[in-house]
Image 1 (cartoon, rainbow, N blue to C red):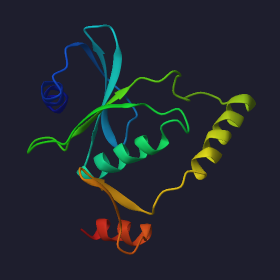
Image 2 (spheres, one colour):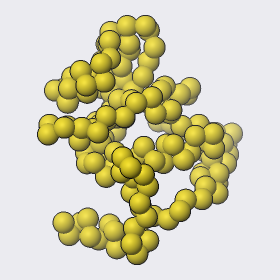
Image 3 (cartoon, rainbow, N blue to C red):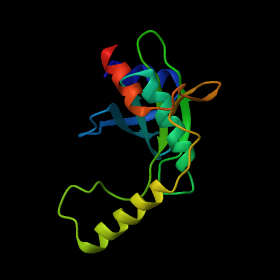
Image 4 (cartoon, rainbow, N blue to C red):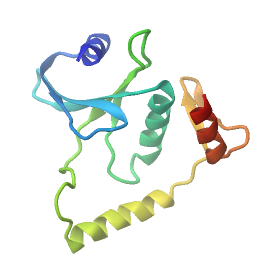
Length: 147
């Protein structure tokens, strides 16, 4: 809980309530209701690389498929890796049975994702996107695992 309080302070948010978002396995995620009544989300990735990568992909996917808008980014400090402040989007998580109509919609968005072109596999730093030297995702993952 201390990390979200740190983020709220750094982003200067006036918060009415904080809710933990369950089943978020790659980051800490919180739903905040601001004093204005607006709902926003704060995502605190477990490492800086994920912070930059998620920021880049959300920016890339804007207008392609429904994704949250990045309202603000904080690059972290010695206690916290950083955080993304995200808009809420319409809908609910798919936790129950999926009917044929929803399965079709999911498959259409999945197909649209595969149409998005990027300059290569890389990472995002505050000064821009950097393509990996060998542009090889498997080598990158192996290197990170070994580290």
